[in-house]
Length: 473
Ligand SMILES: Nc1ncnc2c1ncn2[C@@H]1O[C@H](COP(=O)(O)OP(=O)(O)OP(=O)(O)O)[C@@H](O)[C@H]1O
Ligand SMILES: [Mg+2]
Image (cartoon, rainbow, N blue to C red):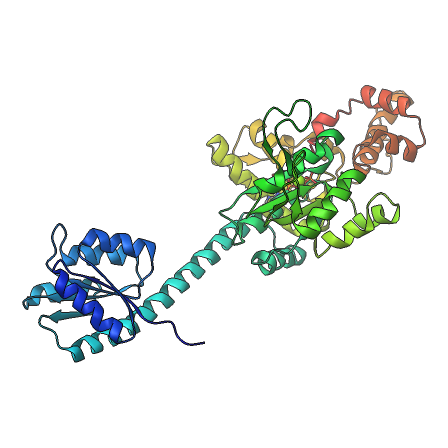
């Protein structure tokens, strides 16, 4: 490919000088333009990037030095050559210090102009490389900051960070799977924020939450009068996310109708708003999350296989918190630090016993549950260290590190009825079963082989309250 001609902007209030310099550089094969005021020069530079600016030192309304300063601030990669009617050594030194590449004294001979242009082009090249490097560094720093807000050193989490970085620059569809509260939404946001789309919109849509009748309009928008109640044009989520990222959450709960609609738009990135014939094309990066393995849903016929293939390009599986307990102390500290900021208190950390309890708890609600537990503890605690007493009773009851089946000894037996003696173990068994089944009462009753009403009654009499357990919301 032939190199594009060198672009040079010439500023001189003496129009004859400016025009003849422009003619000289045009003759040399450059794209040259002459303007006669510093304001026109700045406006021109704003509109078009020039490689070189050649300016007279003595201009009306603004000196060449001031113009140089402005150009260095606004168009840092434009190389500047100054031109003056008389030699002024101090001004020349000042100009070079600010970043001018050369300082020529009128009348200039052609050879001087050619040499100055060569030097200016060399400087321009270095300056543009610097500018590219600086943007690259800025992007890396932004990526670091975004990823730093996701706590985790577990190898699987580190692999997730690598994947986020690897896919950031592209428009590749990313599917996230993992239990509720593991951090899928957080990661979806990170994918957007580390991508070149970061400045464009990030739009979220929970697929299960839209009533069938509003679905199409929600996704694609509608025009005024498209249906009863459509009083004005409405923009859908796909258009709202144009240029940016659309996060389709809970994709596993998308209805069959929604799945079909999504299939087309994901294939073609095109759609028509409800009531309109106009086809709209969008540039949207789609990130999806499912809190159930989609393969299972495909196998059972609840999820379209073609849609599954379409969205399963890059899959990120976020492991449950109980499978990465090594990350637990750092996560707990992270949430405690957040509380310190929120409450204006300087929490120190956790007592050994509290940390032990946290580590042995299975966290059915994952990171969200941990976050809720820390929030609750930091509000309740009297001191600046979170102790076992500040943790919810469920956590203490579920502690498996304390053996529950101690060999009975006659020494510590206090007379009580069998019913009373059985209360504590019964409470623990029911609580553990509830936690293991994500607080699903039907499943828990089934596992324990009691009926649901009995379970409810026992929960009530044994004082088992789901609200105490900061479960996933
Ligand atoms: N690794 C992590 N580091 C810091 N905070 C985290 C991390 N993972 C999750 N969180 C926090 O935990 C909470 C729950 O995470 P998030 O909402 O992303 O979960 P989710 O997987 O989207 O859950 P759901 O399936 O219910 O939508 C959020 O407040 C999030 O900021
Ligand atoms: Mg979420």
